[in-house]
Image (cartoon, rainbow, N blue to C red; front, side):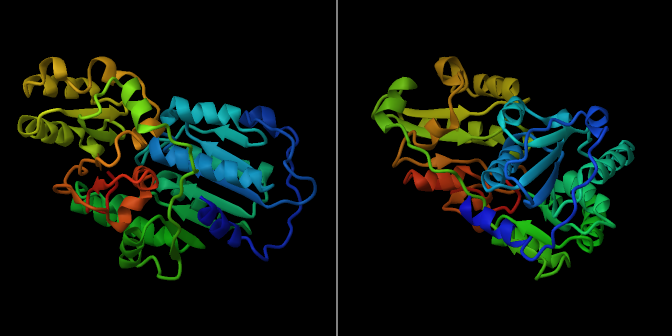
Amino acid sequence: MEIRLHRLLGLVLNVPPASSGSQAGAAAALAVEHGPDPAGGRSPRVLMVVESCAGGVGRHVFDLVEGLLDRGWNVHLIYSPRRANRSFLRRLQATRHLKYAGCPMHRTVHPSDLTALRFVRRYIRDYGPFDIIHGHSSKGGALARLTAIGTAARVVYTPNAFITMDPRLPWRKRMLYRAAEWMLSRLTDRIIAVSPAERRHGVAMGLGPSRVIVIPNGIEPAAPPTRGAVRRDLELAEDELVIGFVGRLVDQKAPDVLVRAFAATARAVTGCRLVVVGSGPLEGLLHDLADRLGFGGSDPLAGRARRSVPHVRLRYLCPPQPLQKSAPRGAGSPRGGTTDRDWASPCVPSACAAGSPAFAPSSGWPA
């Protein structure tokens, strides 16, 4: 986390001071929540734009927001309520000194994108100027870069995995998105990849080797509960082999692959348990799959294992047994060890911090 913040701070070195923008009358129109500036006088001003507010992207954005606020930055956030989960909204309400505004955005290309462009552009006019405009993921990145045209802001884009890395993407869409990334890169000062694999992909698309840089994601240190305490809390025996999964139960994560693999493992290994931390639209389908595979009363998604468990507990659940992640859809089978792209996920650094071996996919598309 410290490395990422220091690298981002370096992007505004030697940026000349800018006069404060007009804010009169705009708060009511844009429904922006304002608190007092975290530091008196001139502090660096950054605007973040994000459409995908759930899962790892939302967590990553708030890690940056909170870290920059702690350093006296003036931070603004435009987010889409359409994909803001409860965790994101809780942090939004709890973060002091953050200025934010909600702007409905669609994940895919949509006619409402023009409305979103006007909204962000108006926000920049009324609450700027900004030293940095930082877009997150595809839609947030496109809006940030297009609305920054004509401003003096440094423009930063964090793809959080280029959409062109998705192995399921039809080739026509892949070429379209690749052309869009290439054109938008010309409006970008820095593109932040979270791993060497993502940077190689960006450079291969022609985005520029000096423009695409690597800043790995970080995690805040946490005091882990003891292995015994967590196992008692989950009613797991000391001698049971526990396989853990952390992630959203969506098609991209391919949790059905994990359930099928566990069914085969459970037939060959006695005393084997699967603990799933996460929720999503596939939860019901996974219960049905477990029933068809003959889990019966030992369905790993049912009963006491189904209740909410904080992520930190699974991170330290069962060393030295592995934390296993299933391969993403279309990426082939998982293999032992990790790849450079896996460090984009907080799960793998967390497992390493706990001293747990990790299994992760070799695909560049996030699992």
